[in-house]
Amino acid sequence: MYYLLALFTGILIAVMITFNGNLTAAQGLYSATVIIHLVGLVGISALLLVKRESPFTREKRPPIHLYLGGAIGVITVLLTNSAFGNISVSALLALGLFGQSLTGILVDQFGLFGMDRHPFRRFKLAGLALMLVGIGVMVTDFGGRAAMVAAVLALASGTSIVMSRVFNARIATYIGTRRGVFFTHIVGLMVTLPLLMLLGGGEGGVYFGELLTPRFFIYIGGLLGVIVISLDNVTAVRIPAFYLALLLFVGQVSAGLVIDFILDGTANPINMIGGALVAGGLCLNVWLERRYEMSFNC
Image (cartoon, rainbow, N blue to C red):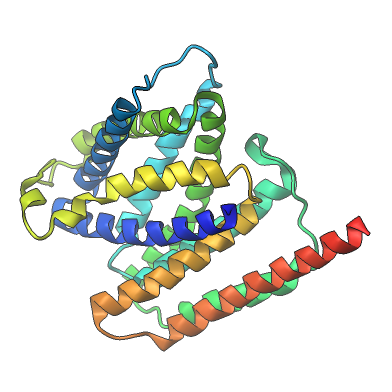
């Protein structure tokens, strides 16, 4: 069930990134980041109200550093929104998830940030190599400085995603998923507002004028972010970080291919081949992992 949840989360992330990218194009980078966190905060606050649950609890006090998940999440939004539009959605997702995979391996290997250790075994190199080939295929048609900068930003976003996911999941074990999501957005808003005031002088500011137009969907990214973080909080502590990143990859790239087709009106065979290779690498690693576990138990 948790593997299916991770796959579904990947699909939601692809849709969320598309909405957030369109919001950035309409409002500006920093204004859009504030709106995303504000909408998410309203959404999770409404859910807490319906559940009659206070966001504050004295039962457990998580370590203060775990609240950094919301601040790191701001970095993720800024990186992905900056890269959006300069490369295809599926390539953006592929590079981000490549960064997640590499970071996930380190988290699993050394038990970073208080997570359980899952040592990297050499037999996984075969599947990982196949995935790398798939990603390489997807980025072969990059050209121009803007595309290369976007690629680097997308790759860096993968590291920030894993870090924020781990911090958010751990804080949820102390105060619950909904409270954790609430504080993630509170901290995120506390970071984004000063950024808007300091760096967003050329933007129009926070504006909801398109809420009653056919483009209302550009504001939905913040609500999807609440769902994504909630699902991440459930799966991140139950699935090794490496496999979680790869399951998210399959969900995101599959949805990204569909989104690219909707936006461009054509299907990119290069991205389809690359996505198939990555999915094949994932299946190979899962199969090898199962064989290893079966032989070890025997």
